[in-house]
Image (cartoon, rainbow, N blue to C red):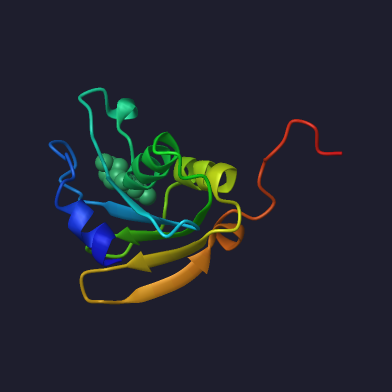
Length: 122
Ligand code: THU
């Protein structure tokens, strides 16, 4: 959560002003951070969670075991991020932190039950 909070300082947020930081812990012990990166075409904005997860993949980190998300109010990940989380780290624990130090522990299994994971469900 400390790494996620530090990454939030790098958020590129000219449109919403809403700062988000994320950090992925991999089974290899590495921590990969991300922040939200907004765009004038709002739909091209990338959330902090996906930034961190995609960066981890790009660095060859293939076993994400936990994801920390820091925001001032302590929000929960959006639907697009949940879908990416279940793809890349289906067993991940998830920690949601806020500026007051509240820490909510959950998991991607809890955040996205009955997820779409395969085009061939049999
Ligand atoms: N955002 C995230 O980075 N993660 C979330 O889980 C929710 C939303 C970002 C996207 C946008 O830059 C800003 O927060 C407001 O939606």
